[in-house]
Length: 271
Image (tube, rainbow, N blue to C red; front, side):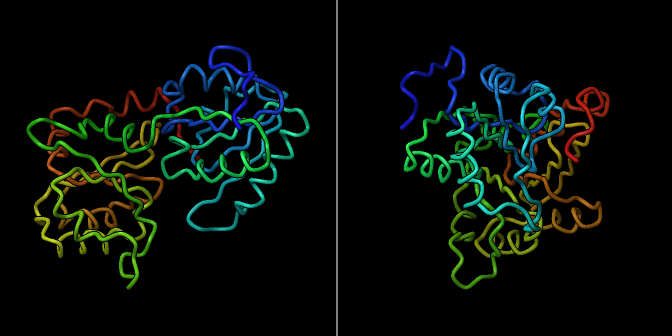
């Protein structure tokens, strides 16, 4: 159960795990509560998608534990992370479990909260700006617009779209008329856009990819559903990146504001 004694405005409680969203990378996008907890934490367990600039908010004597992995490579198993969070909390520490974006949007925060609850460890959830929101805003793409889209869908592209038993029916999403925001989709992008076109989405539907969003390595390419996968390959775009598909992407021509000078002021981004 979440701690009854802790307060959203007070000091952090020892023996509590705080599942904290770090946002998309720019340290100025941290919430006030997230920044306070990073300054109070005895231990921070962080993921691959947490930028060095965000980690700079952690106090010098705080125990830092990297628990991430990239591109399906070797890294901590979820069971190990769960057990570590419980152990650190039972040692009486203030524990921050720091995740890129928001812990409850493709961050496995729900699984970790369930484990903590079942272990009797107090916890709190501190939302962060999820990657699609931050990436689109910095690229000048309004995810909703009265003239373009009244709905947004967040999807994971991690699953191979060619699987016979795929849980994502891409053809059905193609017919929604919504803005599609695809996380972890770079590896399978060609298959995803192919399935969307098979479902009836027009090949000239605007599409964009935002890589290393909001950081000093922020890059954007804008194309169409039919061309975006080939452009990503030609221009060497890779994870971490968010794919946005829908008519709202056309607004980026006029609304993009985060240029090289602003990016340089943020910092180099993830390493």
